[in-house]
Image 1 (tube, rainbow, N blue to C red):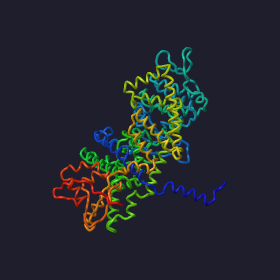
Image 2 (image 1 turned 90 degrees about the vertical axis):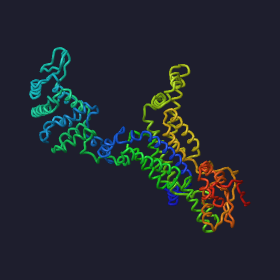
Image 3 (image 1 turned 45 degrees about the vertical axis):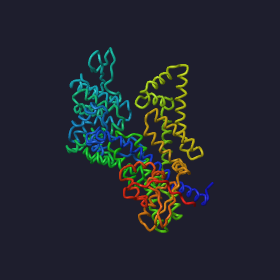
Image 4 (image 1 turned 60 degrees about the vertical axis):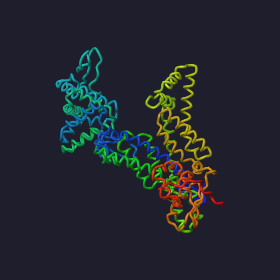
Length: 640
């Protein structure tokens, strides 16, 4: 059944409204405050070990990160062709001593391409072999020819046997490896040549013997190092073996270029000729600022920017600067990067995109002040459009877009996490939960009472074992069920239930694994599902708050500015501001004691000079030369 044009338009309209309908910025503003506090705490903690983390000679020094960001191998798979064998690159062993032997073998190869291609032609033949066992036999032959007990005469006799289609045998009789053209009567022996090799035509066998002579000649003289080289080729699959031989053949003839290519393979375990590009596209101020004193100054400036972002001052600018600064810390040292930094980065990006400074911010206070000031200029009083503006932050498409981005991204995080757990055997057999509970790096196992409880759980047959199986089973099903179902049920009437279950999950992880900041950031993302009206209600003052009357002389510009400041800070509509011929204003002490936004700052009035400054700014009619505000009962509000 096809949709009618009107139905199709309705779906498109609903989709557009979901993302771009004007929304209340209160939720995004509250998330900004919580995120800003967590980001500020994290970067304050860096202050103690700033040099160790990000300094020139820190745990990951500047020279290493500079080399990484300029040289790190980057390659991209084809979107259309999923054949992974075509993406194979030359590689070296992981163990340093084996890697050193392989790299030295490459350096010692003939400098000319023709000689080099001739020397490794046998390896090229092995690379063309698709049968894994056949290639293993062919490389095992090379190992025996390079055995410590094998002499040049032994090798030549064995290779003559190959050309004459005569099998040789390798065996041990309580000593080193020995060779014979007849099978020993006693003991175990192994065939030197694969049967298919002996069955080849004479021309092929002659060519194979020559290839083996050339390869043995260029392999390391030390039998152990030669064994490392051949074993490395054995461990590679066909695609990577071919890529390795191709790398050997295609080494440049120019000595400096050749050395640089081998050095790159040694450092990054990759063929530089097959890369799409080198280096990381990362930025950080710590790449360029390495002097300890300058680093301290920059770090202090970053803390100030984060604090300004938290309180919502110039949020459009400070949100971008905060994100750039935080990414700079992450890019400088990946050793400090884990899930917490990822969630922090996600939140900062969306708070930067959305209009997160439109509510619960200094920017909002400034906007309130400017609106009242403009209204007073126009009409001498606060008109109705201005009162509507003061009643709540204007709806914003940017705020709704930011909220939707966080909501949808959180759903994808949960769904990806839940589905990935379905692939883990540890989750199917329940050991994932138990491994977390007894991991000494994360959990409460350092406390004797917790360790004793865990030991009792697995040691008590009557009560402990049943509790153990119940705990891990419920833990697995609870985690699976929540992470897979929340992305769908959070959009229904079960939203509150899903949010409380998610809070329970993250609180449990925070306690059992000690990932406090990570879990706090995850809970911060959950705030995006709370309606803005709920947040406004929690920040709204009580109806019984003190009411004040603020009369000002409209002809006096100083008093008009003071009235606008008071109206801007009056978020609970406690003060009735009106123009009059004679000013009658509460003192600065009364305003600081009554207005909820100023009450936490009342202690500042005890600092010498501050009370006088406050009087000049918000209560100029009560200003006295001494700078101490008048005291007395608040002026009653006029009856409405």
